[in-house]
Image (cartoon, rainbow, N blue to C red; front, side, top):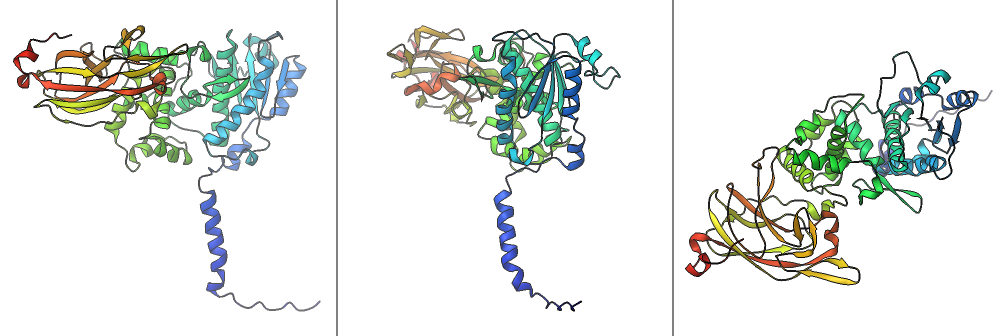
Length: 466
């Protein structure tokens, strides 16, 4: 046997190119989130074994690359069940994109779902445990990469429930999810909400139209909570307790908190970075301790969102610029952009002080067929939104409403001319009345003149108001 040659020592400087290359690779892949550790992935259920059990029980099986779905629901033409695995596969790619995961890093990942018309069929087949390990759920439940859902009659809601539980399966196994309830349920609602575009999955974290999310009811639930002065604040949502039987308001408010943090320009980047870290019990604490976090601002943003939320809500056009404004001690002007939500006027008033407004100009407020619609500050009666003409100028202050509940923009004046009183000491905010999802179709501006009554001329004080 030949003697091995003795290797010379490597000088430290000779390792520099290697270290530089290594650091470059780290920087290149820094945004990519690591998958769950091997013990967590090994704990996943054996989908092939469960599929074999379903076949022996004579259950209907439809499968795709990422989902094996079994059901006791009889095959019906046009019920959409056969399409669910393909839609699940498309959603899986969207979830990977949200979490910056490479789908190729989990080539063998599959979920096993049970779509149940009769739970007893699945209990008898050994596909629904009877040993108490699975709670008595109302609509759906997920255990690692397998889940169950009670079959609803509506196809759109069936898809949503399936994808909601699918997000749980994805995050529990690929992200080792052990987060507080608001995030666990909120992210499942956010990533499951979708519409079909030519039969294919298209994520719509905030639904564009009610008919695209039949029976989902999250936005409607928030509106009912607002109207009954029962809407929770952001801190209340963060404290949502775990439960196998959440009601619709709990799902709706968890969705709203997650949608705000993921979509609002003041919070989205921070939330994205938060999601690259552990999704564990300290998630909320890490959020609140993150650089630049302003809990008071976030709470106010949440209240503003839940007050104005509607289908198609666009954070880029509806995010609030919170400012104090200068005291309104003399005649002043402000401009209202038609394609934005609530905007600071630049001026503030003391509680009980009076002022007058006069607004001029025309704004584009969408279309009626082939006709471009224009409106003065009084709005147009051709269309109404929330009890007021479309395009009508609204003046508000941020305050707790008289009926109680969370703070909101309380309207204190409206229209082209008005005399009004401040209900609190604070800034004046302006906007044109419109569904938040329609703002992209608006254009132009309205010019507003604000005059404190003490500075008004006698002729102005005799003017017609509201």
